[in-house]
Length: 437
Image (cartoon, rainbow, N blue to C red):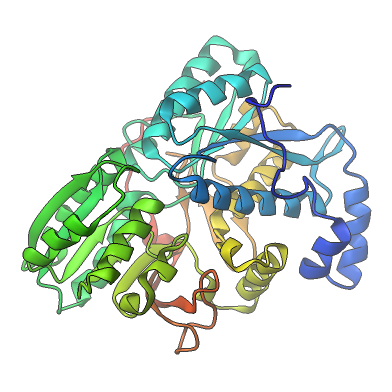
């Protein structure tokens, strides 16, 4: 096995020591029961390939994805792995570095195919996701004995579960239209917003955010003027000061952006440094590094939308978050993404339901599958393979203020819920015409 094919567990062991893990998530009698279960997980490991940018400008985002997926893998393995007719099998995370490039991602996909890894996970770029879907469709048609299933945790281009939907693709995140609908509900109620500047990354997802924002504002707040609609190269801008200057010159009192990773962190840093007094309506304002970058300037100015956040509330939600913090106690590693862990657990449930780790059988089992961890129900809609789940719109504030019990990454800043939408309120229409094998 060559180094370019995989990187096994360089940041953490493959399986968290069971006693340590279960002391957090299942104390007492549950601990003993799960020890017995895990001891039976002696079958051949089921590999899951993570194809993501682990180096390059978005390496920090890739590392956060790896931590979250590893947490999900460890939860499944601590429960005894995947129960199949021939015994219990642990999951194994195989990390393949795409360097944030579509070309490199396709090379790593071929490496996964050469190793007959049947499950591929990616999300930090809709452009990369679209290329992987096309390649996997081709692979599965040409080599039915070496099929792959694509599990998408973050690529939010609506087309992936609409016009370009694929039987072999399943999205576990809300797509851009779903997120924008939730944000629009809050923008519509914010009468202080009169002028909006749209600033997004120059690729499919960024253009989707711009189009969706214009449509939502025209529908819900036609009095709002869009005073700027600009795109910038993804991952290449080192100084956003010129963009902040344009926003200020346009007189915007709000910015709508789908930026993520360093493109969001550097944007909000520039806003803080230049003292821009505008609200940021974001898709990922609660994401890795952003609250710390904003600091006090972000308090009550940054609004974000997500499927979950640490202050969502409830004992079960708190317990899950505390388990994640116990697993990754370093403040800079504290970026939990619930859907990533749930995606792995849902995949394991589908394998058990199918009685097989064959991608075709698992795809069939995933369609229409309902999963509920006790505080966050998910339905994998069969029509388009789009996850339907609750969404939260939240506002940044200092830890300790009402509704902000937990901060993000030790920054001293967190988010309070301003709008909680149940799953049935987030379900979008779809134009997907699924071609099934």
